[in-house]
Amino acid sequence: MSFYQMIEQYNGFNFEKFFHQVTEEAIERSLARQKTGIIDFLNLLSPKAAMYLERMAQKAHQLTVQHFGRTMQLFIPLYISNHCSNQCAYCGFNHNNPISRNKLTLAEIEQEARAIARTGMQHVLFLTGEAQHLTPMDYLREATACLTRYFASVSIEIYPLDVSDYRLLQQSGADGMTLFQETYNQEVYRRVHLAGKKMDYRYRLDAPERAALAGLRLVNIGPLLGLAEPRSEIFYAGLHAQYLDDTYPETEIAISLPRFNKAEGSFQPDYRVDDKTYVQFITALRIFLPRAGITISTRESAAFRDQIMPLGATRYSAGSRVGVGGYAENKPDHAPQFEITDDRSVDEVAAAIVAHGYQPVFKDWDRIG
Image 1 (cartoon, helix red, strand yellow):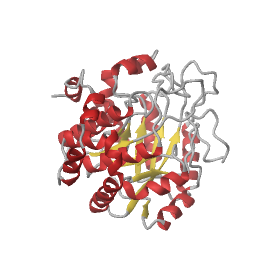
Image 2 (image 1 turned 90 degrees about the vertical axis):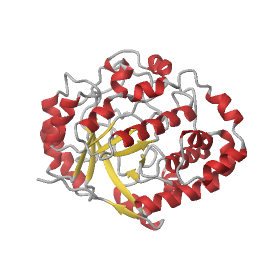
Image 3 (image 1 turned 90 degrees about the horizontal axis):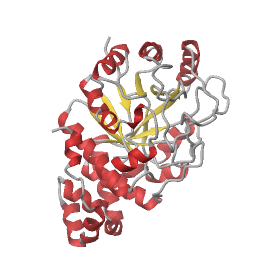
Image 4 (image 1 turned 30 degrees about the horizontal axis):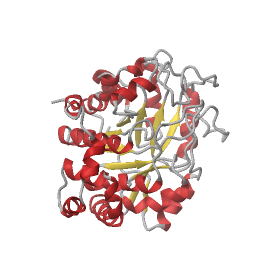
């Protein structure tokens, strides 16, 4: 059964009704289990479970230390192009937005790589908008090969690919990928993706599985919190991660929890996720998926990221620039995809991790050959 077929089984599922019927006894039972199931996960996502947040936090902390130790892996994003053919209502790179467009040359990518490498970072995630005609496979392969000369791990966050193309990038040195479904709600998905190849919900949904089939060691998924009802979004993201972990046990699965940040344009999300609910989502995911990575980006504030460090997160970005380039010349980002909130340097984020009793991990992977 594909993941699409799996979530089709939940068509018509009334999340609001289920959550309304969750009892304190049911939450207690779910917290007491050594291995949680789907119903337990739903119980822990219910509004009523917020009363148990301290216990959820304690269990999430214990599970994280058990499986990951007191460590935090660091990575840094590198945007190499903001050209995009899609018309996504919420995104700064929307094709219709009158922003400055740029694409780094290979020489410029190498300059950026040198600047980033001087910070000590060894895990880089390079990103593009979704404009395949301007960032074709040859360009992506050359960018990947260039970055592998400077970093132990090179991940991609680009447009969805076929298995054969993911395999080509893997052969060029890429070992991980991030791809957000944005929203698992198909009706909302149609409403916010107005033009371009990203309109194809199913092709995007299956892309993480195609990346795993191609041999990438890390697959990172997630929704953009704010587009659709958030508790159901986290449920589907958790279900997606569980499906990938069960089907591809040799692939490391991670989940990101980006909350909507201001971007170019006037889009206003239908939902807001407050800090307490966000913490509930992190801890519920950790309890449901003890071995999954949980990624928290610089969309979140420095103070909040420091506060939630013990609650289940395993991967932090640091020193981020979210416009094209910006590291080599130390200039402000031009036409960023969204606004970052934690603008600390790599050294400052690493120092904060140490101050909270954790070890910043700059490198936990080496490619062979």
